[in-house]
Image (cartoon, rainbow, N blue to C red):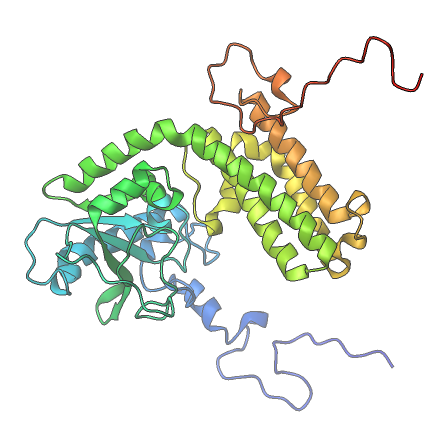
Length: 380
């Protein structure tokens, strides 16, 4: 016989009694999240559920406006610097000559309800230099050590979670080596120089170092773009080698690095440093060059199911994965050529009057051919 359709709230079937207080409340009865929404409180989810009650989405859907959430995080960071960070080592008892910069998603506008505040402290160099991170590469709070965006010789990250203090973390970095790395157009330090928010800098040393580093890194962007393009070609060659040998783990690693280099070229074409990988995909596809790469990038991601068969063939001419990377390379070279950067095979399409950098890759030299002998080939 057909099943009887339930018309009442959950738990009110035959022989069941409705939970207390759930009469007439509909199918969402008993939900803590629903009750929090109806009471006007943030949903009990996320790392920042206790801050930003004014950041409610006016639609009442339990979400946050990212602009308001960013303002809340900036306020949390400023409060941590002025009221809590000064009482923690090594800032405790130190002269007021250090600077504090807010980095991460709270400074760039990419924050969500799980984001925190990352505070970079500069100007507290020890005579012997800062200590190295632990051998296992993990910080005191269990988070991975910031080897990508931290600059040279980072101190360990210290996670702060306590009563009356919104969660944040801080680390101390030497200012001079960090600024020197940014001046060399290294993406990690230069990204903080470009997007970091200076919260405390009484002497102006951090602002001056950041300004000099940015001015020194700007002329190096064409070289950085050339290095990224060469790395992209090298990754594709390594991908071909791993496909021939049947190494799926190396195939996945090469595909990740290949996408990272391709999307980073979009930032370097605009004179900007590439962000960390967690923001690179979404932001890279929104650049001028990234918009031309959307179709091959999404096509490559759609073909990842072919990893089980390594692209379907060990012959690269018939390999589906390798063919998708070829489309990506072709689109990238078209984008580079359209911006005036000559690429081997596409140099004729670059604007003739563009005073751009040197070619990204030198064409192989061909040996001059000897003229045929006057008497014709030997042997008649």
